[in-house]
Amino acid sequence: MTEPKSLYILNIFLLILLLISLLGYTLLVILDIFNDNPIIQNSLVEENSIPVPAVSMSSTLQHQQIGISCRFVNACRVHDCNQYISYNNSNRNFLSVFLAKDLIFSSIPNNGINSLEFKIYLNDTRYNLSDHLTILGFFFNMQDQDSDKFFEVFELPTYLMFPLTMVSLNDYILATYSSYKIKIKRRRKEILLPRLESILGFPSKLESMPHITSTLAQVFVVQIETDKRTKTVLNSLGLIGGAWGFAKTIYTILFGATALKPWGLIQKYGFKINNSVSTEIETYFGTYSTSSLFRNF
Image: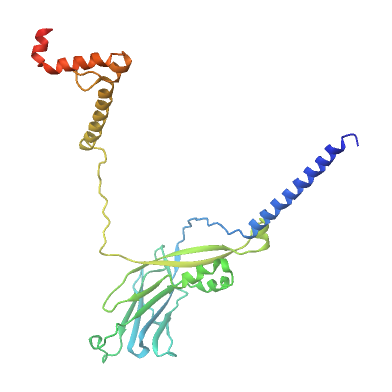
């Protein structure tokens, strides 16, 4: 060993310190990877068709008191779709489900349906709405036909709130003697499950979870776009007046308020005029009128 012993000990100490720091940093990186949540990347894909959603309808009335009719419109004519409705009579309250896997909303003419209509009506002529104190409840819910995939990720705590939200996203409470027009959109969420290849950084298979969103069409709300100028002469007058006042203030501070009393900062400090002289001149000019001063000059 040609180097001094103290230098050798310092070299070993620094090497051990660097190795410990590297090990600690590696552990922090591993914990960061383990606790990492995927970021969301939005993209738009044009599709020509949307599957008709599964619809569930329920009410606080008994199933004998309510009837439902269904029809859809395509390029040819109006068609009856009551065959897609099933009823659940196990409970006293009304409950029905509409499921049609062969119907789609399509943007291509003659390739799908244009609209879908449900009509809910009282089937009991003895029932009078005015004789009951309680308000009738008609519940309308829509789900994507592939919504059963939601339950596949229920066991993942990271994605637990998403399927729970999708279940009640398209819930509506319908009023009596009313008609509603609902517009739907389809979205798809590609979920990255915590697999080994995704953690290592290799491409991993994504679980596709399609879902729909809906909005009630607002018939009586009109959006108005009005042209309005932001730069006009009247608006500019205020800016010009402010600039003029600022310039006048600066001038007054530097050169005085008037020509007869020009004792601003320039006269007082730039030319070093004596204060007693400026006071005497101000008193003299303040005693006489302007016309007599011009005669004296």
